Amino acid sequence: MTHFVEGSYASIKEAVQATNAMVTRGYSREDITFVTSESKHSELSSDLDINISTDISHESLASYKEDIEQGHLVALVKEDPSIDNDQKTGATNDEADSPAEDPNPNSNLTTGTNSDTMRDNPTPGDVPVGDDDDAPGSVPIDEDHDLTNGL
Image 1 (cartoon, helix red, strand yellow):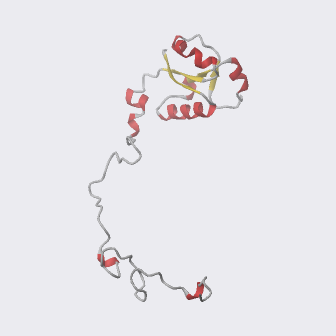
Image 2: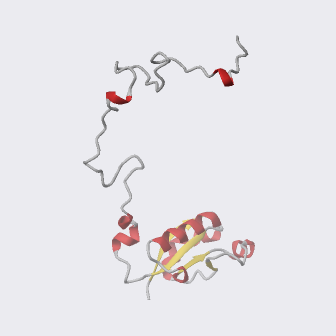
């Protein structure tokens, strides 16, 4: 079975996040191995939920040897033929290109103003007030909770 390098990660936190992202895209945790240096391997806790190795002999790791020597964690992943190209890149998650973009805008929604029936004073620019005893735009007075002590 063929392997590929998903990326190089400077910290265990980044490696765990990368693992979670790959699992979300359809890869099995068992098919993901992080290769690192002997010194970094000895620092890492054995109770981590990721596979860690120091075997740099795989041909896919040739251009990552310097990263490994520096203590980075390089993700070596078994190719899974059941995962298509969109899953590999995360394109099937229907994510917007930016957080402000809606990938599936609903054309039935409108962006109008509230109807005038919800306002005490329909004059544009006035702040709606729900109590007819107060003038539009004023702050209602609550005598029971007056913090000004009659100032």
